[in-house]
Image (cartoon, rainbow, N blue to C red; front, side, top):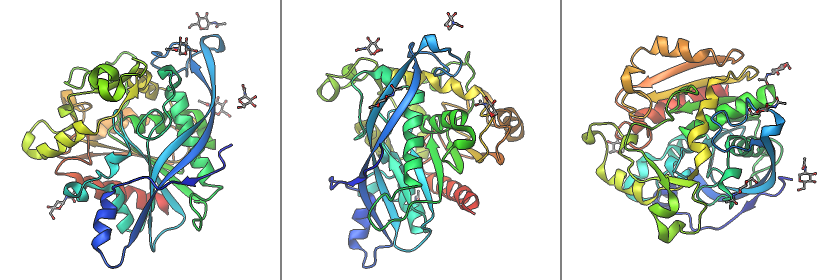
Length: 367
Ligand SMILES: *[C@@H]1O[C@H](CO)[C@@H](O)[C@H](O)[C@H]1NC(C)=O
Ligand SMILES: *[C@@H]1O[C@H](CO)[C@@H](O)[C@H](O)[C@H]1NC(C)=O
Ligand SMILES: *[C@@H]1O[C@H](CO)[C@@H](O)[C@H](O)[C@H]1NC(C)=O
Ligand SMILES: *[C@@H]1O[C@H](CO)[C@@H](O)[C@H](O)[C@H]1NC(C)=O
Ligand SMILES: *[C@@H]1O[C@H](CO)[C@@H](O)[C@H](O)[C@H]1NC(C)=O
């Protein structure tokens, strides 16, 4: 199945390219890749099942058995670690651009550039249904089991086959998620257990959601609307169960002097879609990842309006105690709360500190 990795010459205006174009010795190079992955999973017949089928019996499930193209941007240092890959998964209604906003003005908001310059390769993917990856016509095919399996299959593939000619398969893969991307790595850890291809996971901007908690973002201005109503020119033909978020201010700190208003504008222009299932199945994170044995770290912003309301992130020790119960077999578990950061850790004025933190965890887990 998964067997071909095609490098495509898409017009990828990466900040890295813009910057490196001027430099005499490029420390990094980036390429767009498309990797077909085969997914064969059971999904709940009810796409609003908050557990994503983890508590369902066979009669309430159906099979999704399909091959999807996963698009990503692979960045590789000219010299550095060739054995460890960071697999970056963006949040809901974003794309891989979250990890490297592709305009010069925002060139130092690039985690891919930050980590590549320090010697670590990354692959920032578009989740199934988003950006340039396959978007199944029927949004109810894009559920947690499907999307999480696509990430696991991709990682498994990259441990046995080379992503580009001349690049060896990777020995270790560290999953780094943002928000929904983190929830998907979490789901994969529950399902894959000891078989997980992820040696460690760094879950940014996610906390456990109980089945009775309101879904992430509710009570804020981050309201889900059908994508075809939000932008008919772009998305008129989409299944109405593909949704997006128009007002993105809740993803930034409450004080507007803590981020660039132009970043918020850019964020709005480049927003993407998620399926409705993606918006509700984060409650699956309340189920223990009983058999996942890699290291796990969570990173959240103290000013995250989506997660840290009601002083939830003030007492880090209590938060850690409450969250580590769902990781009984993990090699290690820690939570880091970043003072001043909002939900989109990478997009506000504290991004540099967030990059240091994430990179520090990856360095520790790479050993
Ligand atoms: C399967 O789950 C459905 C929905 O929760 C329930 O109505 C049904 O009784 C269950 N069937 C079996 C055989 O447990
Ligand atoms: C999944 O699809 C493949 C072909 O695409 C087929 O060979 C296989 O039998 C299918 N598996 C199931 C369980 O349906
Ligand atoms: C999507 O697939 C499900 C399950 O096969 C089906 O019940 C539903 O009618 C489909 N929706 C659309 C819009 O085709
Ligand atoms: C964990 O592994 C045990 C032993 O193999 C198995 O019985 C159990 O079902 C697994 N748990 C999960 C959540 O997969
Ligand atoms: C971007 O560069 C400016 C000016 O050099 C600096 O003040 C800021 O901290 C940098 N931001 C990040 C995210 O590194």
